[in-house]
Image 1 (spheres, one colour):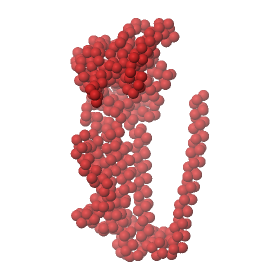
Image 2: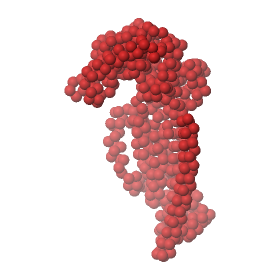
Image 3: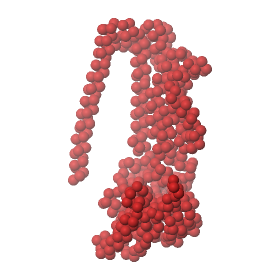
Image 4: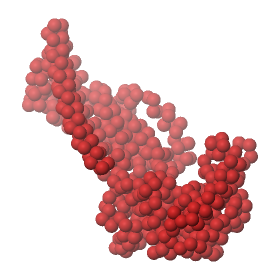
Length: 274
Length: 261
């Protein structure tokens, strides 16, 4: 009895979910169209040099991939690769430092007590505030990498610590009664439990990382870069190109964040922790 | 005696002095015995079990498992938790094999042992499921299999069916008796259900409210399965309930309702 009732209920809700989704997609299309029309209207109405209409930006966007920019000498895909490399390097650096440190801070009280004051001093500083210093001290190559590192490091660290601290006390008890000592508690319970939290940190870090890379590249970038491209276009008054660069950043950010969010979801599901 | 508890005392430090949870507790457990410990909330019965498990330390007293003092948790005592405490990222099989991995038992032997206990608890075919795909009763079957896979001397069960609905609970009690009869384990079972204790136990230990100590023990000599509708079952239940009720009303902790065990 209850079985048939609930299954009927479920199929009805599935239909409702489908309808809701369709509705949402329609709303999204309307909203994007409205945005582009608004932009278009504004550009025509104001007729400002630095606010080109969408069609001009779109042309510049396409062209930026096919012909090298005369001022930088690179095509957009080369810029993307250059920025992406820095992004990955900074990210990897943050990962290898934040993961072990976060696990230790979460698990070993004195490490936490020792590191906490230093972490708390540096955490509130916007990563971009470091850009001038990094540029002077480490040069144009390391500057964007280090800025991304700082930007990604704190969300990763915070989430790993949160993961370690969120471990169910009963899981630890269960492992202890199964004969696990401190090391095994760590490797067999705390570490796997923290992985979904780490993934949350990765997703947040992805978003922050792109902001960092764009700002850091304004101080100069060897071999091009999307942020560098945006700045140069402004300097030479090529505003459609400037907006094309902004669009590229938006797309890259959206892609990496949603990819990482998707990955996070899959990992959570596969680990039975969604 | 497989387990001897003598003059056990457990006190927790408090702002003004200490809170004595268990005091003057003595218990001797025979091998193969099924003991239920019953008591009002906050009587320290869970604390008692955690001390036997080695998860908490006693303030004073002697605890011997096969004549050796208990100092820390170990796989010679398997524990089953009320909230199941299964590792969500591990499959049923991997959960059952947890202790075997820790003992570094080779993979093929591990699979053989885990399969034996998975079959024993009736989860054949669910080896590769994750805990979140299982019902409460099935989860606790995994919990029991995991505890038994280490072949412990003692099976410690902390209100293991407390989170289950009434029907599943009755079924699991039956299943537990079957498993107990097949494995001949010594069981210490914490519960606050008089009915459950009367159905399961060889001996029921009724605890007083805080500080927890033994108020009375009931030896049950009836065979199994027991008939809940029988007159002697009803009478025993009535007697124990009356005992407990007196305890509950004399306990300030339960009246204020602040403390839990």
